[in-house]
Length: 340
Image (tube, rainbow, N blue to C red; front, side, top):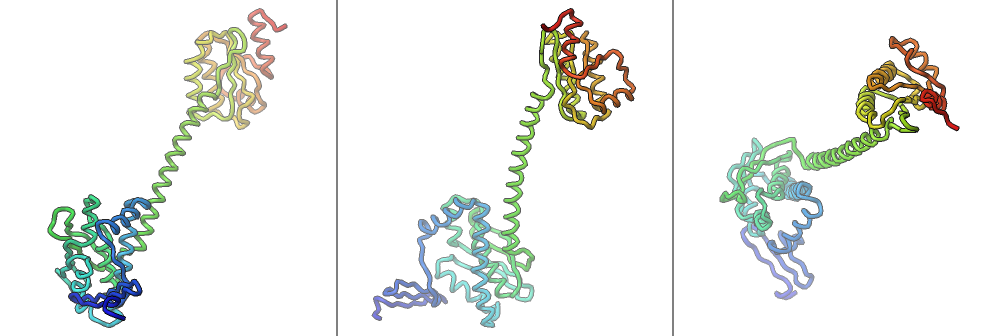
């Protein structure tokens, strides 16, 4: 293999090699690949954020950086090199590879703590091109992985300084922590799940309001059947809210029909008649009586009959009939009319 096909060079502590005949680029003896930061790699990260969203992309990059760093740290850990020796080697390896300059501000093997400072990292350069205001998560996550591998214990970080915020460098503080990338992934999933649940709850609430409004419109309508005779069919079960709505609607709209007779058709009422329902009838009757309207009740079930009988309300002024037909005939007869 001639020199045009194979080339090796050391830069600092970093070892680079090329095998042009195979189309290979080697970094520290392993296959590697080069990207242009300003175009290709920025496009790569932009696409991840576009597809998955900023929050998900941040967790993805942090997790990827951590796991890549863990491989590095565990490699040296298995080589039985001391963390102190390894950490001093890393600037000479990472800086020539284009990661930016790395300074070890503080490192304590006993406490398993460190403060690392990076200037002009590739992530900072891309974040700046993207117009971001906060530092990315790949590089701080990566060093957390490296240190976790070196110490044999989970290490996490906090960003204490960022070039994107106008500082001269990015600074990351590292310390033992129960925070893990897996927990972050699960927390992201839970947050997304909660967002979807909230969206679903909002849709359900909106549909419930729409259905409630629709029920109010069609529930117990006032139906004019003949001149000055109207019918209100009572359907289902009446709770306090529904009873109040019926009373207000009846009192407000009934005068528009100028009725002499109001026929309450209770054929469709729920079989479980409550005291509230009986009270509703009497309130309706009392209210319509004040308007000079006579009330007729039709379709009374045996259960309702017993409830009405045992109630404390006076029922002598109310006329009762088995069905709507009889009620209408009675009202017409009272007006001196009949159906031919």
